[in-house]
Amino acid sequence: MKALIAICMTTLLVACAARPTMSPTAAKIQIQPANSTLLSRCKVLGPVSASSGGFFPEDARQDASIYIREQAARMGADVIAQTNASFNQSNGVVSFQGTAMRCY
Image (tube, rainbow, N blue to C red; front, side):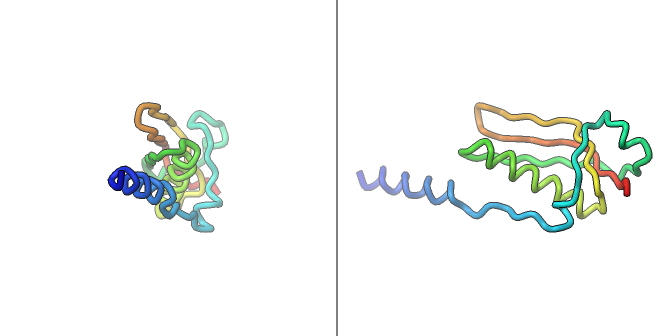
């Protein structure tokens, strides 16, 4: 019984672990579909991708969005052209792929 309580408490602590925060620069990055005509005059900076998993799919989606925006911000991007988004229902992992771009 003590082992079960310890496992439950550990699971609860992991589920409530600190979530990532988004920098002001990353918060300004727009995400557009890769086929958007708005991207025709943008400079391609390079590929970006991020994944996150967890007990709650919406938290995983938000975390992956923060991770990909932060990666693009470090490259000097202001837009991400999203090429793929997926959710693996068996393990709760959300993945985003795209291209970091400078448009403005």
